[in-house]
Length: 544
Image (cartoon, rainbow, N blue to C red; front, top):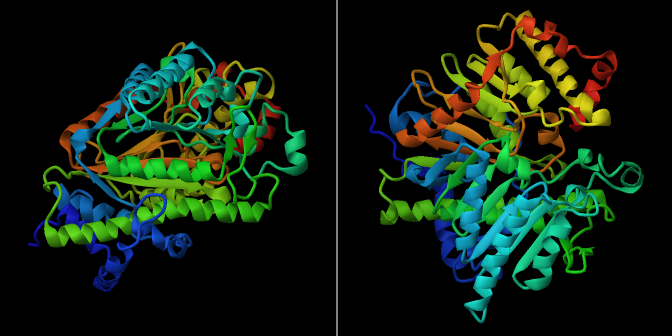
């Protein structure tokens, strides 16, 4: 019997000896020169690697046993991920699943107050209420403390928001942050991403309330020194009180934090920069997102962002080869968890998350179970084909109409919950037509006075009663997430039993508040969908 493959051996095994030899020979030259931004000579390869975006490829079932236990089973089953994206090894004990909006809010406040080097926050928008103001005051306190205790303040704060959502109304995200920008100009950066698809006549005609439907910055990353929270939650009061989402805290995981700090910086570099007088400018040499050429902007943005992904991948190849020869770093017992960052930015030609998600759904074999959740259940056609055609059992959780974020909204937006009822019914009917009711189950989340915004999945391999993999972050598995917005999430693959138990408890907590959908669900009076809503549902699927 072959000896179990180590995590270190797994990473090394996906790179051929010839490639590794080339890296070894060129590394001596590379490390003689320091990059002007980060001091890392590996980044000198950026122009060569920026164009390396793997094309979708046909997938096959993994050769390893889906029910295999231990390192060998997991490494065999998920080895392909390390071939496509950076793979960060971390101790599972450093990862904590947060379960409530208040936990999320308090964790951010506490870590902002103690941050010494960096606070990096990416969100759709920053709200304007009291809780959001307290968050801004935490940043002010940390910046002031850094300024008073050093001639050259070390703490830098970088905020990335969406331009359209962050600029809506007289009081908005920009006005919330302007006092900090005016007071701590050298320590503060506010970037406002503007989709290149909202331009020209369309930009003039679409009302402010709906212009974000064209495309937004949707990444939710909250970073404090070397700790980071990945979530689907925005920086707004409901997400701190009664809007259920998912949140994972990675503490003292510097490589993961560095990656997401670099990613936010890269998106920020191609975004509009907020100035102390509330004007916006582009960095010198950057293409304007809606005044410049559409293709030129996307090409520049794609190159800048893929530099981060590819450089992290390259750095790991060199690092892990060095560790194999020198036997340095943490013990194998501590390195029981992998973190894979997945980025999806289709308007810029980046579709890493889509490729990995499709492969996961394709490889989900018989006797495996996938729990998938989305606050806005609107699977793309590709994802739906994979779910309906796979061998795994699926338990899909979505929002009931009364916990949909648009429930009770005025105007056209008020019809969105009904449109999602129609989408769910179409999906359920297709499951029934295909005779898949025993394998694919649809659930609705219920909770009085709350809304539901959780998204992601939990993957149970055959014969296991705890998940070994989860996807968590901003994507919703719908058309917008795949085709319109900027998204990021992480795949966590773990052998750590405590972390697996946390993931299981999180999944069970959410599903315990749900009921399973049946044919009678759609016969209830409150599930009646008007004809005009059915007619506009295809439009809603593409824009909401």
